[in-house]
Amino acid sequence: MTQSAEPVRLRGMTWNHSRGFTPMVATAQRYCELHSGVDITWEKRSLQAFADQPLDQLAERYDLLVIDHPWVGFGARADLLLPLDEHLPAPFLDEQVAQSVGPSARSYRFGGHQWALAIDTATPVASWRPDLIAVGDLPRSWADLLKLARTGRVLIPGNPVDTLMNFYMVCSTLGEDAAQSEERVISAQVGVQALGMLRELAQALDPLFFDLNPIRAYEAMTLTERFAYCPFAYGYNNYSRDGYARRPLVFGDLVEIDGRRCRTTLGGAGLAISARCAGVEAALDYAAFVADPVCQRTLYFENGGQPGHRSAWTDERVNLACRNFFSNTLRALERAFLRPRYPGYLHFQDCAGAPIRDDLRHGGDERTLLERLDSLYRESQKEGQPCGRSMA
Image 1 (cartoon, helix red, strand yellow):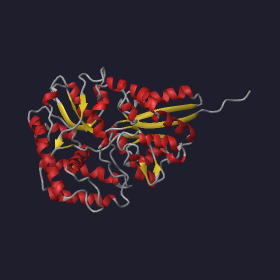
Image 2: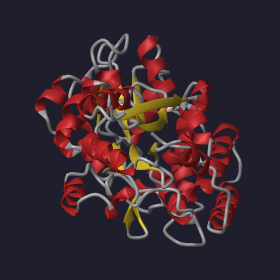
Image 3: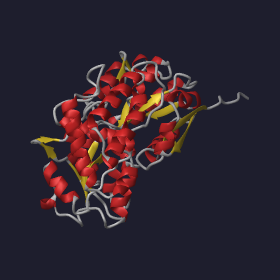
Image 4: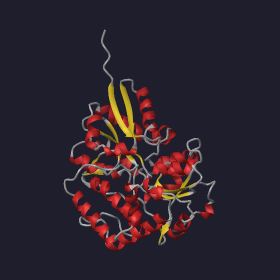
């Protein structure tokens, strides 16, 4: 009697939130039901713990990796990831780009190769408690936001990396994207103005915000009655669904600065395959299964996911289930700023947020701070440490 072949066993790593973990478990379960010779196990870590372990260590231990797009430069240089364009059909990848939400699909393309599929996407957007603030009272401008913040009802995530993303946002909205030259992060004129605006906002907020990431900010908004409005935090559609949060949120577009809607910094997550993966054929087939538009707007979304495929963002049934999260925030995604992805960038991202947060908290000389950021930036362009903080 012939023994049956050993199943292909794949291990994946993602982050510990209903948006990051449960859709991967659900898609793996269904995929394995359809493919009896494959076994896929997903593991999870806190957002911080997942970020703190470098990609080279994760790629050594796991076959499937949910990654942040700035990792692709380091991953490509170190040959850590499988170039998907060499294995998946060109029409499939072309459709992924054509139906991308904003720059999500191309954010995982670097050095002429596609290193991950944009199965999830996000950018900071506004949110509010509809039971605590009326639509007519929502701020429209930065001045309106400052006025509302001084009432004590506004909260933002202000940990170091989110503070850096907020800095990018204000600079970009003022008309200058960060990191466009090799010598400096931003011009002194725009940098000083952006820091001043963020400091004025920080002084109006409860200092607890300095320790929050987006998840903790949303939990504070939905579990307490203190905060009615968040002007910008990476969107999590889960908090707009019935049954998930104690008090659901409504999400929408952002305030204006000088007549321009805030341009926030792209986040999200891509599904990559380790170059050391032994079951490449099954891993590729599973990745395509997850990124497929039907899966994205059904199984993936229904199990807590935040799809990266445009068809899910425009689907009426999907939007009905989450208070129009996707249709309300799509424009913000489409104009999102794409962070650098050169191999050493995450060294800068890891180190630059804390001094900005210190400036917002304690004050200081903005030009000296900008010089320090420029120094970190130039250092990161060398063979820097592959450290970093993931943004979801």
